[in-house]
Length: 127
Image 1 (cartoon, rainbow, N blue to C red):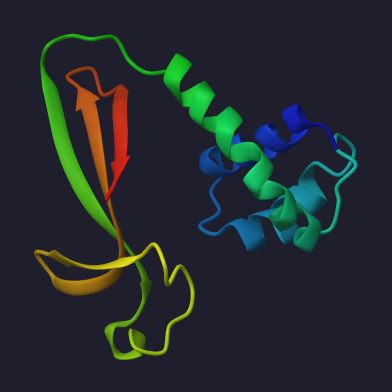
Image 2 (cartoon, rainbow, N blue to C red):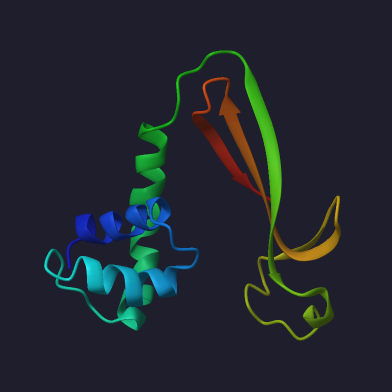
């Protein structure tokens, strides 16, 4: 499967009504668009995901919004587990941190988004 086809699948996931990638891939995409793509298995698509990171970053850089001078900044938490399981969690154990939000503490990442007054994405930072 080519890189362009993989990027199309990932980008279309965000435009689809599905909430998680596994259900999107196994049920929505495989039934609705089976004739358009020669789809690999779900586990193979997950193995190919790191290959798409750099092209997605470059695509986001070229599609970023127009600089207007008026910006809005917002942050959201990306928790990777419940607080009860912080001590036993092994996912992202080297790069995740304990953070604070208005709802309390969490283990994971904090995503900061900058948008302009037209609603166009300007920058994304992960802390």
